[in-house]
Length: 412
Image (cartoon, rainbow, N blue to C red):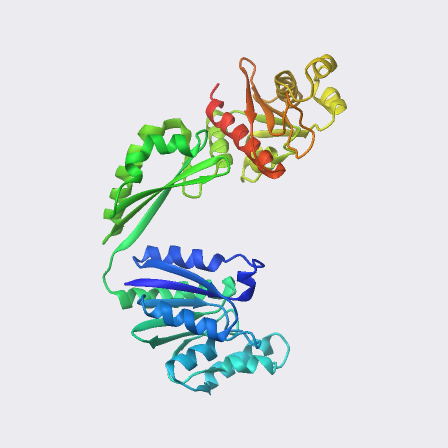
């Protein structure tokens, strides 16, 4: 069986709201082995919505719609479905009772506009919404199951997980399921990763591998389709082992793991402490480090030293270094790293200085030039980076490289 998702709302088309519902539903359907071949977004227009439903039903076994079930005049899903299936809207007394109880609990009487949510097409199956006011609806149309869910994620998600997914599993019977695993890579460009795993990217079902480039990161997603979770897991494990052998220490984690989380685990394991001095990144690296619960075990101090006087006063950067080499230089980055390490009595110091733009660049020192230094009592390293992108993108890439340097060298 295959499914299709229609997201309803002019606000989605205009970009005022990010469509998180479609991605969430797709992931959940994949977990129970239902393929999603099409997704679409349609505004609050009954004619265009009807066209979308007709097209979806012509090619998909299941059509899941989100949105358009609210109390306002631009919520047209219920009326459009009723028209397509040739049923009149009737007052459902149970839904009406739920609506009155919902508003009574909030100390108000049932608004006149909300009364229309108690009218549903005659004979359709409805499912109580325990969070909001719009019930879910299930009906048949031209051989397809039509499922209508409310648009707000806080209402949609409980209905999907509690009621719709078990219903679809029963409907599909014993079917294939899909499992996935994401391998996360830092320190290589997408083309470099592609060169090492090109043959795996050409695999066909039941196991496939996809490559996805992010800012400062490349992900490899392994997907396996099988009739049992164990069998799918074994397929994934076999491919994952191949990827890990080929990419080695460029891999920093998997699935929901983050680079800052990987750094934290290593620092705890190696019993090392960390201090960071930042200029162009404005504290972003320290912020990412402290996003991890328990980071107080290894993070000592973060200093945002934007001005030269602060670099001199707090970090001990030499005035002669700044005069001769400039604030954006290997020498300054290294002195920042050493200075903050000594200031905090930490095992490791990181120093970052650069030009995030959009102004401030010159021919010898363009926008995107960043120096990242790593310092311990015995080892001193400086990496020169030349990033592209907007200011926030340059800052993030610099933080990513700094964290990756920490990950690779925390045992020094």
